[in-house]
Structure formats: C-alpha cells, structure tokens
Amino acid sequence: MIREPAEVVVRADGRVELPLGLLAEAGVDLGERLLAFSADDGLIVLRRLEDATRDLLDGQGL
Image 1 (tube, rainbow, N blue to C red):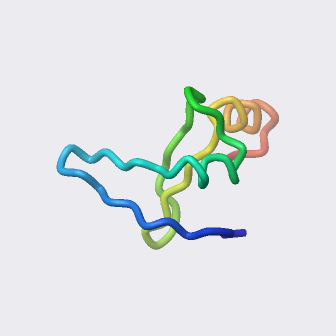
Image 2: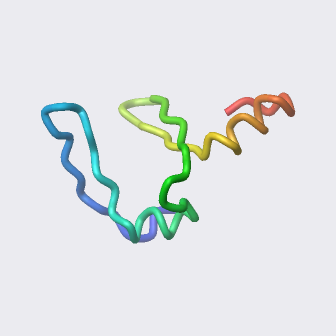
C-alpha cells in the first residue's frame, strides 16, 4: 500500500535520498541495512537485509 508518494531524484553518482517519513511508514530505522533489487517494469524493491535473509533461509524467496 502506498500512503504518501514521494518524488526523489537520482543523482549523478547514482544515489537516491528517501524521505524520513517514507522510511518511518515502512518501519525502517536509521542505520538499518537494506537489500535493493529490481523487479518488474522498472520496479525497485528495498527489503530489510535481515528479513530478506530470513525469507531465503526459510525457503520463501524474496
């Protein structure tokens, strides 16, 4: 569910800043490690590294 869309800009070095409100809505804490991967049609997914690792070990995939 998308609550508050936020426009972000990809910088020349490839970096993207995510608004704190968006991170808070997703329950992501500052300093938390994330796994980023591309999915369908330009979709970029961010998952907590801990959650993604647990899912892989449990055989659930990403």
